[in-house]
Length: 354
Length: 212
Image 1 (tube, each protein chain N blue to C red):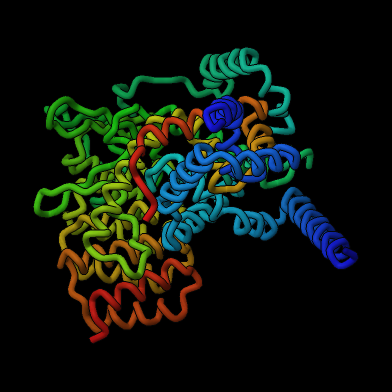
Image 2 (cartoon, rainbow over the protein chains, first blue to last red; image 1 turned 180 degrees about the vertical axis):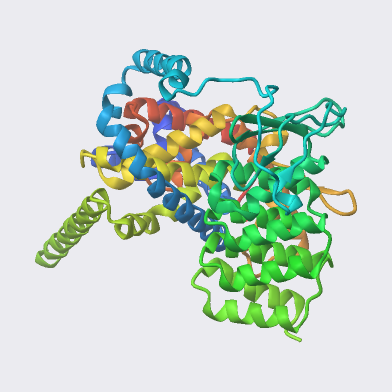
């Protein structure tokens, strides 16, 4: 009778149900299981229906899965190339340290590694100055300093007493011979601008403190960007980050534009380009972006430039003129980066070929 | 019969040749050949980015996963001992990086599908930014597709990071469960159970939907 057959089928179905998922997924059952499953499906409408549901589900999910578009992939590749360049630059130092202290020894011994790092840090802090014969003196001790040069941008004047918004040492010092060792930012509460602390190494350590609105702080940061070969990447990156808040200032825009053109670190160039993006529309910003798109050897910078140009044309910050069109046509035909070629073509399509 | 045997032999030989060629490429990259490494990247980076995008669901996070994965490969290439295929090793690293991202992320729904505000104050989510690939799509179909996409997105958030990874690797990368187990450092049985749970959760969430 059919009832007996149905009861037997349902009992068999319970053992096959879990395997339906694997059957629908494909290539997970062995030959014997596949054959037995096929035989069962031929006689069981319930399981056939369950298999159809499973396949429908996979089809729906398959239709809506996200595929990376060409632009995203090209952008990722460009960023990776830059990151690999930075890795190679740091590789020499890492290899030297690795020969002294192999990472293989350290990595499975986290406790020993941590203890060793603490000991190294403690030793350097305690014995480093003595070893180097440089006594640590507080910045308030007055010392004679070289006479300031005529260029006001390279010298910070001392003040007799600290003002409410800034404080610097009582010495005069010349940025031409000084080094900016570090930049610290202390975020303030509420809407107050953050406090910036610039650690300057000269004949004696000097600290310049203030907000980004302080002209002394701005002068030092601009000097760092304009003389980028003298200062480390980290300091330059911090300088760009802080100056971003004053990107409408013509002096700051000029320094950022120079950083886009001449800084040796692509990350600094990209950050400077990004900082210019929000600046008030000026020919300098437009020209900087066009030059970066045309000439910069780093594809990541060119990617940032084309993205910024499209955004600014879209928002009306810069006009879409023959000069811009010529650069876009050139990049569409000749750029080595496929993302830039695609974006240039898309920009011409969106804004018109005139 | 002889023809099929010959074809099978050809296929095996081709696979062996491909493995050998990739073996040389990895060796060259280990020796410091940057071009060889970039060739390896080009072979697999679309799959890596696809995996990352479907696991973390945010372009910026996928970009981070992509970069972090390849940088880890680059830094540790000297430790690769050819005990598995290069792509297995690469996907293992990518999966771990993506899982770390997912575990770090707080489980807010808005984090899973970032909502953008347009000029009129309206909102649209992640799927609105994906290009419509169907040439015959009409607006109604587009809206329905977006709604379904949002529902799928929500359903995927109910999966654990491990379940999502197994589902993605099985159905979109076409990996066998045993290979997935190797990638995740677990057993085939555990992976199978993850797949069952993932499928059950998705079925419960999307019950009633049908493919177009």
